Image 1 (cartoon, rainbow, N blue to C red):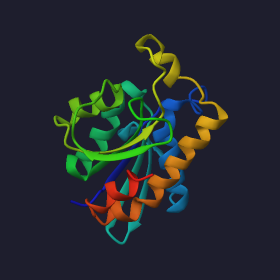
Image 2: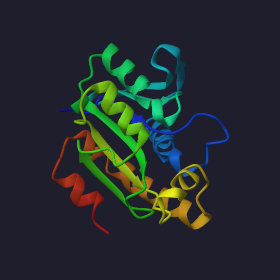
Image 3: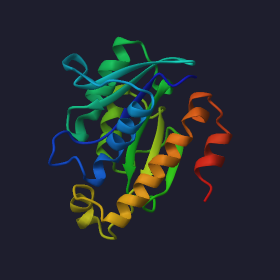
Image 4: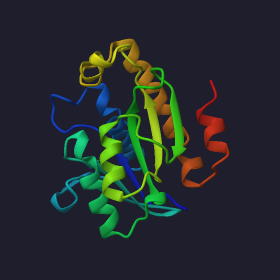
Amino acid sequence: MTIKLIAGLGNPGTEYEHTRHNAGFWFVDELARQWKAAWKHEKKYAGHVARVSRPEGEVWLLKPDTYMNLSGKAVAALAQFYKIRPAEILTVHDELDLPCGSVRFKLGGGNGGHNGLKDIQAKLGTPDFYRLRLGIGHPGERTLVIGHVLNKPSAAERELIDRSIGKALAAMPLIMAEDREAIPRFLHSK
């Protein structure tokens, strides 16, 4: 199953631009730069989209304009219009349950309380889409989570997150080639 839609999750607006919750946006912005794709605002998909012709076929990049907890609106709108199945979708998002700077790849599973994933699962009617999880670390207490994700990481943390984004970008040829065994070997190693 070829990836046809890569959705980076985050919150729109300059006040959220550098917050941990926008790690998915950071990833797709860099991917768009590497793939020489131009972003265009598309109201009917509730987000910024870029279309890329790749050797594997056409791939859509998406940054929802909705807030994180409504990410499914944009993902489902684009997927339905272009008849993209859930198993052809890759979401890229911040992950509290992973140490800062780590990156994981998986198909399906729970949402771990991530409101963006929760909404995408609800709108697609299935959890069976791919996820690229960028570790941002956990603040330790549940009451601190909102403040943690909606604030800027320290310079050291940002460097770790940027390094994990670099590693994830380096894995894109494996992801696009659907090498399901090599992806975790590459991404999950130290």
